[in-house]
Image 1 (cartoon, each protein chain N blue to C red):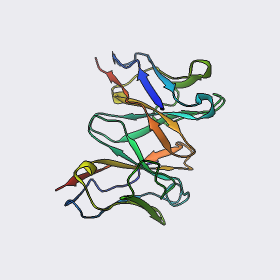
Image 2: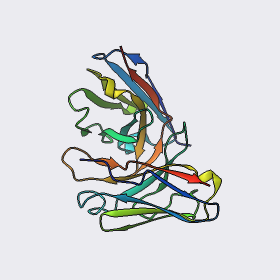
Image 3: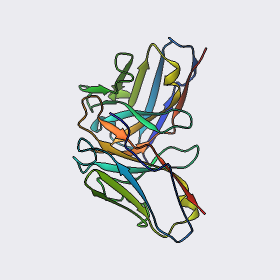
Length: 117
Length: 112
């Protein structure tokens, strides 16, 4: 059974930093591109970032480019999102999602990041 | 790059059919057969319902079907059931220089 379990979400002040983690199991992690998708409270889904199976390619939405860094450790079946210079508009539930060639076939339950003073 | 456009809400009675539209551009919905649909119940993670415009993953009811015409994709739920009440989001791969994937604005489906 595929499982994605996010962690690391907390309350942080504007300008602060945070690292999210996603532990994957139930599939061959290093075969797949992985993503972060976020959902602000009461709002829709927003794609944030992706990383290729080997970590060699990474891409970001304009809204986070230059502030967030996606990474992975295939030896630990783990995905990460380093979030710097956080803004109030980054407040959201952050999901990690497994890609299966142009769609997201599995999602975690999300971890809540709140940026507030 | 803006979100794909969906109606804010759609409703129907049990047993009826409803259709949710998802309108994009030639850079996303119209340019690729990579439209997917997700169901999200309150407090839950999104669940894949349709991929590659019209394919259903194993375990998803055949009451759910997808199609596309030009820049607009559609999700049809036939034989509407109480458990279908949820938010639905479309998504598409995009050739935008600033994004790889774009989501729809979301549609709240209410079963009357």
